[in-house]
Length: 253
Image 1 (cartoon, rainbow, N blue to C red):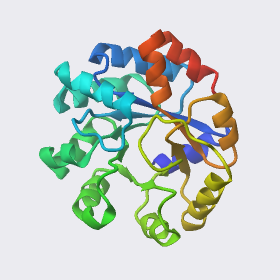
Image 2: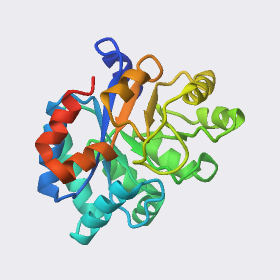
Image 3: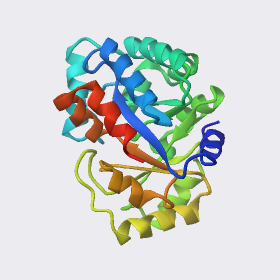
């Protein structure tokens, strides 16, 4: 489903934008209005992050937002309710992003059944590799949820080819090792990494970790199908408010 959507959107746009929002930050009501603003600015897909206390892939900006949401009382049930409200209101694909502990505690089958019921079409769970995720992937597939796997520049070509066997929807390529939010030096090394990904899979590629400007998106045109923007939008939300986030996304392409 996600792959078809991306391919069709590519007929209109040469690169798609995927935003990242932490549910419950600054509050559930403000999250909904933030999503509205970003959708109206023209983004094509969106990650809705279910907050978790130990988000290993997240840098300080997203970590702070997750901790604030949890401190404010946001729980997984709240996230499912908010996701249903969001998917009912806005006509773009939404994906959950979270960590395996959240899925495990809820139960894989229940988590993905509720994910489907909430109108979510994909799940990014970076800390569950395919070797340990047979039942995870089965539960996702049974509920027509695309499990999105991570491809990293530190991975060997053999590892990337192995991961490619399990892909659905698209692959999330990280621009560098480390966590989200830091500035990324887009260079020929990134081109080499993306070339290795292209050899391994025909699925669309998204690239995140450090995409923060129109110049970054311009660099990625023709290299990936989707540019992912998360931490920079949160920085703007923290300093200038929701409208500034909408203005930012509206000028990225």
